[in-house]
Length: 270
Image (cartoon, rainbow, N blue to C red; front, side, top):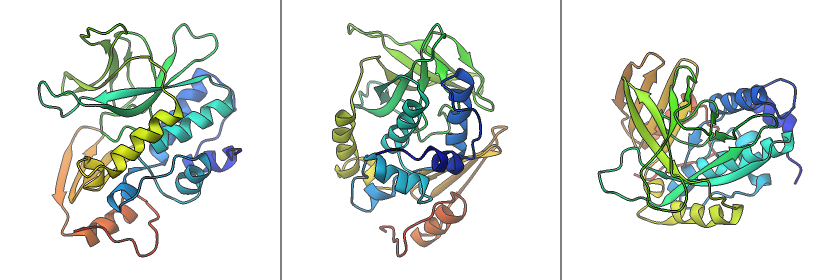
């Protein structure tokens, strides 16, 4: 399939010269983060979302919907490839929120992007559903800090006994560097994520199949919905929380606050 770049750029509100430069990578990454929400409605409603590019374009670009990491980053990798960037898919273990000693599977999708003339590749990720997510790509180099305003990130090496270097994405919150996920530079392929996507969407023990998770980033704030818990984090770090009354109110919030164009007749469990 030929991806409709005009429709994609209209969806994220981006205009610019379509060349594989650092400036384009940064600006398109940020525009995607601000333009397309994170959401997991398909798994909650009992199905695995398609990762076929035509379906992703129909849903995320033309359908007014969002998606979770495999959808966002599969679409974004296709966009970058069309723009002339060499892209390598990677997989990460999410560590934010994990208890000490917990070992989670590598289920998060991200990517390494090469830019001609740059001394190091870049880490890009538009699909991490968290207030600690990257707004812009970060150079894949140790202890290089990224001030992706209002956020602040860095990459560091994590302790590891394997043959490959283990990288850790960290975000700074209240003066403390908080780990988000760890990864190696081992390449993954699209069929690998088809398997992971099916597991995460359909396993009854997966958090993504049991409750709604939605995230939306704007220049002013970050909105997060987890089940019926709604959290608004302002750019200055101020946090407002409230519990929604029921699934009907959750649907209204998803449509109004998260700007999701929900299918007619959508009903959430519970």
